[in-house]
Length: 381
Ligand SMILES: *Cc1c(COP(=O)(O)O)cnc(C)c1O
Image (cartoon, rainbow, N blue to C red):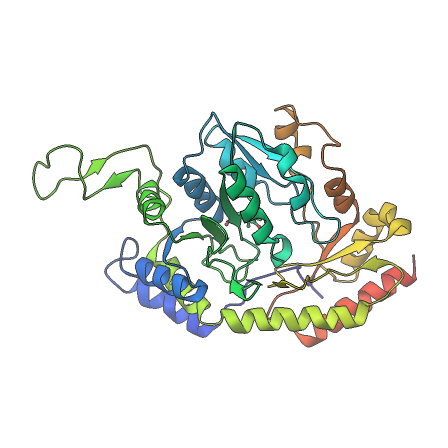
């Protein structure tokens, strides 16, 4: 019997037909599926503009570029995230400054942001870890007081809500970034998007996605109808219409996907509440999590047995994973001079954390196998 993964895509026949439809059309890239997908995302999130990209990472890069982040600047983020969050700032020569996390949500500890703000700080990038929203009102308040941009790394949080507002509405931020990697809520194979209510950022990102090229508002006199102009250095970060069509089809099922993820989370909560081995993930009053991950935290007596627990769970088909190694522990970051110990809560979280399987298409018998496997492994320790 094969491993039950911590996450995977949920693709059905209608998704497959949506891809075939584009493969038979005239344009398989740079066609009209892109703007259709973008329009549907803005509607879903209740936001004005969306720009889709070929990955969540390129979407992050574009959003940081749009707010003008450059080599003179620092930006604040937290270390319990995928390396892309801070890497995207490094692409622009800016310096990531890591703020420690809350011990239970692993979201940025908003009470520790202000002490890290300097005259060079330009941007705060909170991550809605596991799909549980950060307290955005607090981040917004700090940003306003200190004249900083806020970009939400919402790669875990499509379909989540903060105080009744969809993540992606950008009510408390300048921009919000999503990923459509297969483990995320909806997929386009690889893909990502930035949402914003600001027209200038929107237009800058459209150009950034395609080499910094524009076909309007020229600087030079146009030579003829063929004319286009490159006005700054951009990239080829375009999504294909094949992917956008899959995205459109997937988006129709998003509410169902999120509902199912929340059902699975409630099932795990019931199975594991008050157990002596690990803590289950919290959900704050202001939050409705979209449960990209279901994260358990080993209690003191068990955190030193994580390696053993991890391999024993895998032997029982439970495809656990660890999210994440603190970003600045990676050799590349150590080489830039970040030292261990700068975010003790994040490091402690890393020692305790395990992600257990959660995805909409998980079968009931596999869910039972997961809960039984977990109970057996801990009882046999
Ligand atoms: C997945 C993810 C990304 C990057 O997305 P890709 O689509 O894989 O490039 C960035 N940040 C976080 C928190 C993620 O989970």
